[in-house]
Image 1 (cartoon, rainbow, N blue to C red):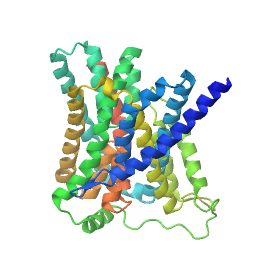
Image 2 (image 1 turned 45 degrees about the horizontal axis):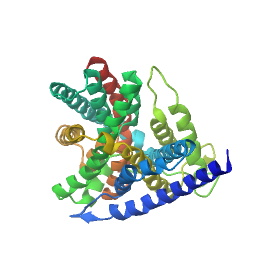
Image 3 (image 1 turned 60 degrees about the vertical axis):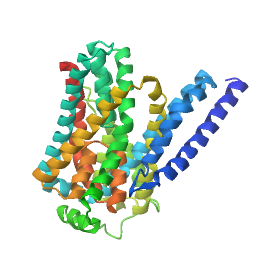
Image 4 (image 1 turned 90 degrees about the vertical axis):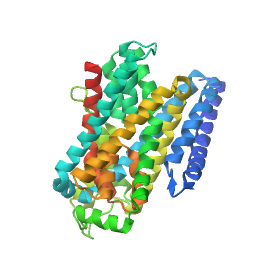
Length: 405
């Protein structure tokens, strides 16, 4: 590499680091703004990252070499994936001590709710495809299906469904259309669920302390206590965290007939197991509570930052109001169906209901918001129980839509 090329790479790294911390600082400041008790919270980072992607990222690319552009894009992907690993692993550790008892007690409810949410979203997507084909959009049927399936995966903020859809459409041209649809719908897919879990408690005028008591009673009751004599490898528990993430990435990388747990699912499941058992022989394998809280929040912020910048880069170029409307419908209708099904059919308490909804919508940002609103980490257990059902169902649904439509 030439000296000039090296200097450009250094400048790219410096500017990227500056951008990351600027987005975090401004995003948290905006997220703190409250309107009638409703605030974006960490999702404010996503809004700022999206705007950055729209207005600054394309300009930055015109001033960099091809190698620097590739570096920047890869670095953003690393930031996004690192955030996802930190967040879902922390959620798994937090939910682990009560997860399996809670799952055993409410297994049918979680499965049914996950199916209701994803199936209603898939039906909505299919109807939108039929409507779009009746309009003069200038796209052929396969292109319309690719666009709407991309919107479907974005509306549910489902990276596994997004990846499966790209693989199922078969051609680079259709894959790019899927990516566009995902990017357009992802914005409301994040913000919509974040706002929903805040608005519902406000509309119902709930007593949050009573709801926390109901959630505790609905779950297994007392959390498991670890023996005091366990050996700690390090003070904060980073060894346990890193070991769980390492195994999660490893198991998530395996594919069986184009289906895999993905990095997200693998890290979540391994962390749940670590949290459930609590020790491996005399060695403790659960990080400190404060460590988990920091990793969860930092992970969520980094994930939203990486996803926001990369999504914003093409947002303006391909945006059409009708596509955004389709995304709103595919996010909102499953939320409403799932909420009323959980409340009136499954009789779940509010926090169990909303926690399950965030898992059914595969919405990690909304879980972070719900934990903040509820004032208890126990809401993560319902998310963790519903998430695997939704993960499998949304991947299958996206592929079936492509095959039959």
